[in-house]
Length: 472
Image (cartoon, rainbow, N blue to C red):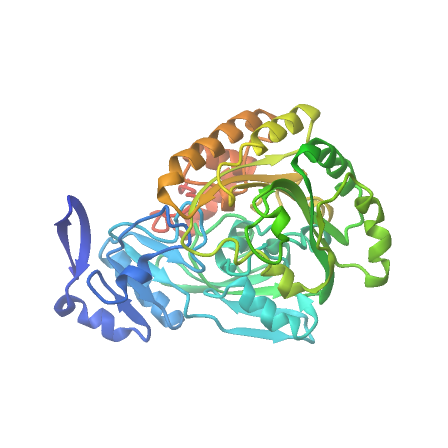
């Protein structure tokens, strides 16, 4: 063996012994980080500071060969493995106790092919990396709403964001992946090669291997007409009813997610509004800019807006608009559901619980899933809830661990009140570790097929630190 178990502070973890892992260390082009190394404490941290785990080893891979060697080493020595891309996973599934973290964050190569309208993205890239590369060519592919999010985690779970109504989910634009399987093999998955694996990774998460690169279709996106409009909290019901009816019938060029939130305590928000609880919609219009004002005319007649920040903006600027509000190191607790309709009863509950935001970074979002996302069948990819209208997420967020009890209690109470009005399952990228029943509910009739693919490509459940699909 190349590791030794040590009891420290009544907790067992594995530490590296240089003399016993020298062969593994020397075989890597990247860096092997162990407890006690200068980099260890920073290297083990993930985006959600509520997660505090101590891996035995962290391998910052330089290339695919490092990934293969890490997978083989962990399998040979029966060491648990977690895969880290951007490390944004709310449940902390990018790390583990006593195991090996395969950290792809140094693998950030990107190649845009403007003629083919594709982009090849390595597994450690963030969406900010991708937006930077593709914007130069006037193109983009659907992603999320925070640019520091990792490409891998967001894509493998589905990929909701500003471009969903116009161009579908991230997985609807995913043409191919390169992967390292549990047995160390390197494979390609697309519509022709390993088509069953290609089906599974489009929504099935990190259950099937380590994705070392993604090939995405690009779409013409450059300057968008976008940003938030905020209304007083006491107009929440009116705004939600308008939003419910408006967005489902709006042109697909227009995307907007609804939010219950607190105005951030700094620029560019006016001092008079800072720390006020409000409701809002963050818009993204990708149509002709000369038509934007007419598209927004009915929106701007709604209620009495407190702030209208919508206007022409480079798409990467929209993607990074909330990065400063949600930096790494905050305490996060997520609860989520898919939603088919926003009844008046559900809206009343949103009004009640949204008024109780316990800290200024806590929020509730409703992301639309209609438009282009509805044109893919519920069984065409692993992402099942194609008929849903929204993905709802309730997040308790704060920098201070002392506030965890109240933020978690608020999020749970809010979710429990709204869950009876949901479609049943949830977007897996917005779930904590909630058990097998919840995972099955989120994949519905696709779960059985996923277990069959899992058995074929990972029969021992080697990749199990995820929203786990067990082999059939």
